[in-house]
Amino acid sequence: MRAHERLLAYVRVDTTSDEFAGKTPSTPGQLELAGQLADEMRSLSFEDVRVTDDGFVYGFLPATKGLEHLPCLGLIAHMDTAPDFAGKDVRPQVHEHYDGGDVRLPGSGDVLSPAQFPTLARLVGKTLITTDGTTLLGADDKAGIAEILTACEQIVQSGAPHCRLAVAFTPDEEIGSGIERFDVAGFGANFAYTVDGGDPGELGFENFNACGAQFDVQGVSVHPGSAKDTMVNASLVAMQINAMLPAGETPRDTEGREGFFHLTDMQGDVERARLRYIVREHDAARFEARKEQLRHIEQLINHRYGAGTARLTIREQYRNMIEQIRPHMHLIENAHEAMREAGMEPQDVPVRGGTDGARLCYMGLPCPNLCTGGYAFHGRFEHIAVEDMDACVRMLVALVARYSR
Image (cartoon, rainbow, N blue to C red):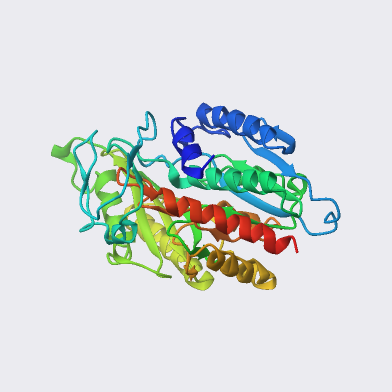
């Protein structure tokens, strides 16, 4: 079976995560897909396949006889899709021999256009998989799952000698809450890769330091006719808080290693208001400075309107993996060579986000991030090429071969 055939099956299971569920996995569809994947792994000769109560799928392919002494290589992908956009009732569209022009998405009438997505020029002549325009596709990261299992199937069927391979599929990566329950010791890998990146050839071993920040504003509501020097409009205070942040440091205005404050949602009235942000920065010192800037705003607001008007909560999420990767640069060198063997040109790209691998690095499992071949994740314009998925499978097979010598 080819990787895209698996992808087309997996995207039909709704695995949208929910950051407000308060449990792991946050949604039942992730357990549904976990069960399907476990059954598939057993059919591919995986051993010790298990699905945990919190939605992790683990299994391994035993080393070829005589190679048991080699280190165990891990491959990891996540099952959930982003809560930012609809992930239910996904109807993938397959466009053979893409001609390089506009692609109309039949469910919404929207157009996937090279004017908006210039990378489409790389996909001319290939078979394109898109959404119908009403949902995301879910290639992030069901393409990674499909490529891992297809590579393992090819390795088993070919009889190629290989080291022990540990495979895991994880829940709730998109909301940053699942991986803290990952069983590193039980997984048994000496090092691993997440397969959760984008463009073909992309390799990530740097990522943002990240936290979530929330301002809760307590106002004072009185009759507006007698509000002089008494009313504190919580919604207006929330607007002042946001105005104190640098206007040019948003996701729209930054790139590469530049950090940002991202207002993800806001709500409020006169009495109460709430602002939620994600805060990102590659450099550790600048990351701490961003958090200090938020604390300073809290102090200013409380000085201006009275103690308790603003309450800031900062929740740490993940850290830059590069400090944990540097002692294990064989992971980068071997990935580069495997990409070249698969016909890709390696590109070391600082990840403007986080992956499960970033957290795993600080849990004792060095884990950079490999490409899946997908584009425009988390929205109606998500797309991927069949041939690029095939190339990612070849990359994984070549990578296993390098660790099996």
